[in-house]
Length: 176
Image (cartoon, rainbow, N blue to C red):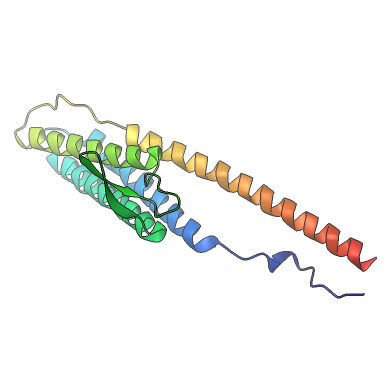
């Protein structure tokens, strides 16, 4: 009879990279929401709120860029030419484009939020009404991205729980 350690916590913990991804997501979401709130609170008589909106939108954009750099370094992507364009690719044997559509949309959304905030601030400095209203699409997108990450993590947890259940069944059957 073989003795096995049937501890449920034997599975390796992969929390570090997931924790960093969640930190990026929550920080970006918070900054985008605060930026949108300050943009809404600003007016020609209160341009300092618009300045806070610009600063927060810029910080959210920088965090989005930082997240892409972090993921690129983690995946060890390489810069290669694709026609006339240069793009980052996963290393061989994968040879696929680096990044996903949500990552690119997050970056473009952050850039658009930053541009809208700067334009609004410039109008309010001149004591004029802003023709561009605040765009909350980046914040909505980040909330959807968080939901998809939660869903993906739930599916991964179900897979891990299933593997642990099968492992316990095998250990139990071997001990009989």
